[in-house]
Structure formats: C-alpha cells, structure tokens
Image (cartoon, rainbow, N blue to C red; front, side, top):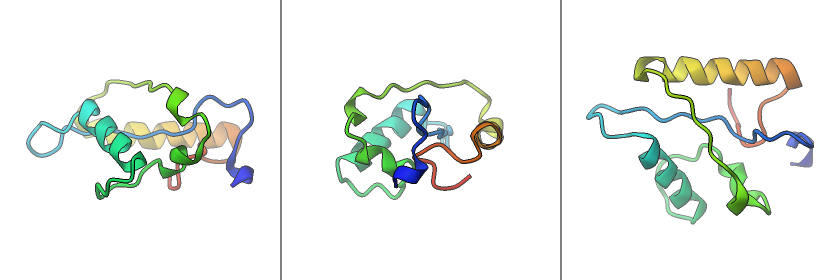
Length: 97
C-alpha cells in the first residue's frame, strides 16, 4: 500500500457525483454515502475506500468542480488522466481510472 502513496501530494482521491435519474443525487448525497461507507455502512458503492485507512482521514478536505451532469464522467476521466500523466499513477484512493 505504501507504494501507492505520493509523498507531499494533496490529492488523494478524484470522484464524481451525478444528479441521477430523479435529479436528487447531488454532491451532498454522494459525500454522505462516502462518509457512511467509512463508518462501515454497506451502501453499494466503494469508491475511495482507501481513504479510510489514512490516519488523518478526519482532517481531509473536499474540493469540487461544477460541471454539467452529462459531462461528469468525462471530467473525472480527464482529471484522472492529467494526474496520471503528471505522476505516472492514479491518486492514492482511486483504484480505477
């Protein structure tokens, strides 16, 4: 696991939140699911699960970029590609991408 860590890098996970079919799945809902997963609640999504192994997980900050819902997946893909091009690997908690 230590081989995945980039010393000094501030970005540890790149995720996304979509509005969903009914338009009610937004960033707050996604972050709540993320928090619940970290607390051990089975939510059916495990993106970023390595974050919960960090000693300072309770000090991490969330940043976001607003984009139209149809472009959310493309934005995440581009951000991951840019990160990988710069560092040669994904952020610590991104297991795919």
